[in-house]
Length: 403
Ligand code: NAP
Ligand code: MG
Figure 1 (cartoon, rainbow, N blue to C red):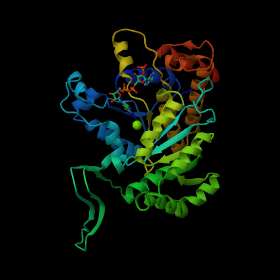
Figure 2 (figure 1 turned 60 degrees about the vertical axis):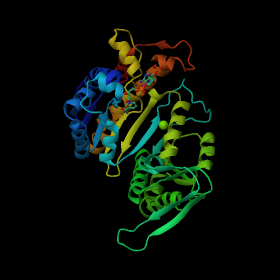
Figure 3 (figure 1 turned 30 degrees about the vertical axis):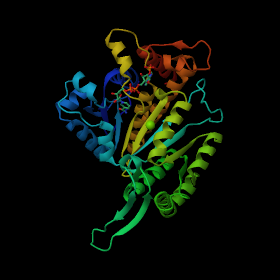
Figure 4 (figure 1 turned 60 degrees about the horizontal axis):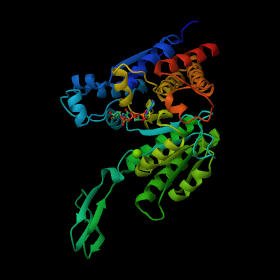
């Protein structure tokens, strides 16, 4: 069989620990035999980040801006323990944070749904994708502990020297707390744009919710920016695509989600997205079945698994023990990136391959062959538990039968 050709290189960001091991097996067994894989390789493994003073992370983000599509392996975010473990020169920042800041993107997280692994919420039949605004609010707040009686005010001093605006937060009779938060029209607009674009891209309805009835200026600004952008730039395209934009209050959204079938995107403010994405992923079964894509308003895409480097399994692997680590989300990061590359380059063979590999992965699990994490939660009787490598080999077998 002739291998599938790629026109433009895909930016490949390698990573750490167990996911780095899976990365190589996925490439060797599921990609290289079928595709003339054209990637521009960046090693974001912690050792190499340290050797390059983290320049490799910046280079990989710039390459993503150049080519448009990247696929990323999970990476270690250094902490005190990693400083010693890897003898690091510096406690480098999270690569995801660096890349996100450079691409100005929104992260969309979606569960991979398979028969036999049923969501805890029995109504949910299709994935619910969470889009989290990753700037500002409580994550960039300032807080004070008010020690005793006094006043706290919010003051805006215009840069042009005109009169300052001042409002009272609270007149304290005794001790308490106060906090100040902010957000930016530009950032909210980028977020909204990424959400509308991704909804069109994936042909899914878009929901957005805030608490605008209570927060009449702050949350209301989010509501207005979404509404203006929708009316002025997206309504027609949504109508043509047969999808809808739906705004409601956050509590109403939560109530409706529990009764919905899924199959839509739920755009969330920063805090709502933080909290709700953990609820959605655990209710759908497993973090190992959750994909993640960073979509920038400029049209750049970076695909990855939502989970980390699975450190505990890696140490078992190093000790020579067998592991049964789930590679599904990492496989779907590759298929997502290859499909997007195929769409942009107009190479349908690449898109078809991505579809077939995803189907082979799901079919393999539905036939009863899976990793340990899934075997523990599946409704299928007597599942076959495979080790990390054999699971990928089983997918290859299914794939070869279908090609
Ligand atoms: P983790 O790698 O997501 O793993 C936490 C636990 O979840 C594992 O010990 C395992 O549970 C289970 N799990 C996660 N993915 C799995 C998979 N594919 N197959 C089977 N089980 C899976 O989180 P962590 O251990 O807290 O973090 C490890 C490293 O990853 C850290 O250095 C962190 O900085 C990094 N991290 C990176 C990213 C990223 O690059 N996007 C995201 C999060 C964390 P059992 O042990 O019970 O089997
Ligand atoms: Mg969280």
